Length: 502
Ligand code: PHE
Image 1: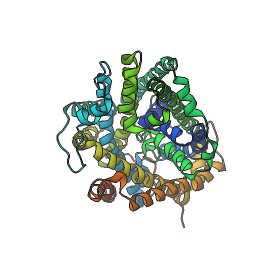
Image 2 (image 1 turned 90 degrees about the vertical axis):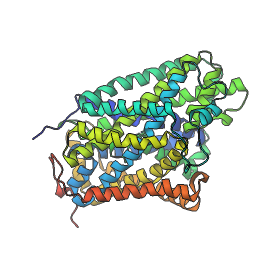
Image 3 (image 1 turned 90 degrees about the horizontal axis):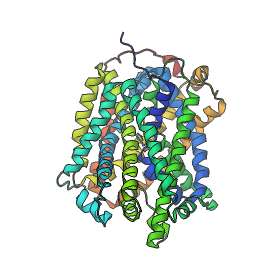
Image 4 (image 1 turned 60 degrees about the horizontal axis):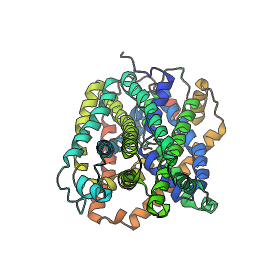
């Protein structure tokens, strides 16, 4: 029997898990979430969500992956053949995310080069929408492909698939062992100089001054849980796949805690980086910070370039920022790739290299749609639907299935048998009640929101064609794959007894 690949070291595994967790979400989403939800007071629900749901869910995914040794479909199929579809659903969600994540990384790589000469010019907003993306009026009109974007997209695919192609230890682990320290270094250098800028401290005061009335607002709590789930890459089957390469005697709960703490610590550091820049920019332009704080695409590709233009050392800050953004994005993309490649390898019983090539070819072809003039709008719709429904639904079903239909106390005993930190019944309570309740609440409120009003003011045709239909494609794909009767290669641990008998 072929031997399963393993991580080379504990640090290597944690770096890879952290590499997946730290991504665009930490840099462009977290700071704005804090700002928008009552400043420093948001940190209370955020850290509460981290402890009550983030750490328990991470331990659960690590535990499942290590116990059942496989990618998501194989893990669920080992528990019960009837549940294999859930794994495929998560694989499909990861696949779709990769196709546009690659393009966002491509924008970032382009901006890294532009940063050497502030190629975005004196009007970064016009540059971004009109010249760089050539945005069309509707997602139904794609327009032409943007050459620089497609080239960089190919580079993002090449770099990340190369890591996956080369193998768990010599590819994924080695790349993350270079990328993660590099990322921290870049951000620390940025902050080291950034905090000395005039106005920077005002930015931090804005970010961290608490408005405690926000704590009583349900939306703030939902945002905190949403940020935790997305940022930790849980519910995507990623952590489950990564943990399946852990050697037998490895620790689970301490590794999970480390991954979570490093990720959340990095988010706070990113908040300091972004808001020191916004504080400086507000002072230079004489406008309040509230006018310039944004998140997502606007923050990274419009606000930051505008700020960089005003800075004393624009090349220094610009290249550091966009290199950091690219590295954070690439390491997350590697983990998305691995989910799909591992599932293909195991289901079709093919080699890693073959699975990587099939996946990367299909994935790159789909990515091309996002490199066109309609790409940004398309991406906006697909991202909204995939994150608000695809990921949440996968996460909620996963946690309910495991916590309510499986012998969760057996899993807890299994986790404790090899972990430094022993988990008690509070863990079971969290994954039986708190985490599913929060996920469910978010899911229902998103659903009500999207059914009552078309997302982002797009036409019904566009939301149907690219939003809702994406979800149907995921369901159909999951159903078809799980009906294929290929046995999984290398089934090591079939444990039907894990399912509760009723
Ligand atoms: N955790 C990543 C972030 O914070 C996002 C992500 C989720 C990436 C799932 C890959 C897979 O940006």
